[in-house]
Length: 178
View 1 (cartoon, rainbow, N blue to C red):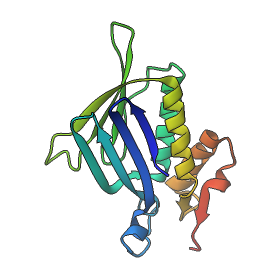
View 2 (view 1 turned 180 degrees about the vertical axis):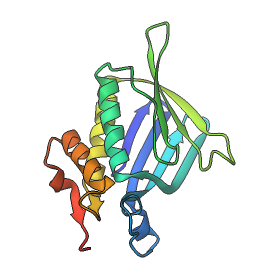
View 3 (view 1 turned 90 degrees about the horizontal axis):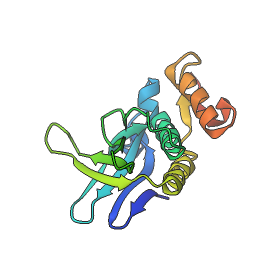
View 4 (view 1 turned 135 degrees about the vertical axis):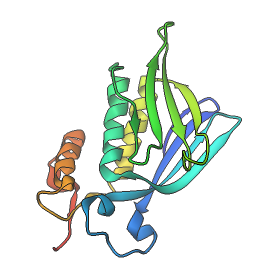
């Protein structure tokens, strides 16, 4: 399933394809970050131009944070800091204009060092934002946070994800026998 936010000819899509090390048939990494790095297909279109990137763009818990960010914006909390994946893209930010219209700006680039990102503005429609957040959470169910160490960053992030999903943190963990 692909999580999608679309208004008219403008759209952003995020599809979680798998843990990056599995996608490339690599040996499992020995750290919480490497274990939780997701291969993501991201597509952004403004109706005239489009950009599609398939790469290790986000960590499992970053997808959960983005869903929470979208819900906060949908609830009228416009004091949110911009959101981006660990690599800087996809990037999401909210902007309230003097006309009282609220826009969500989404940016996407394969590599900001080598190309200018495509930036698309959307009206921030609360119903569509909540639907997009819900779709991201559904996608994330297939990719639990993988825990290597009981005191590692993945444990802390799983607790946050549990709060996002309203469940116990353990439900979102996959433990490795180390």
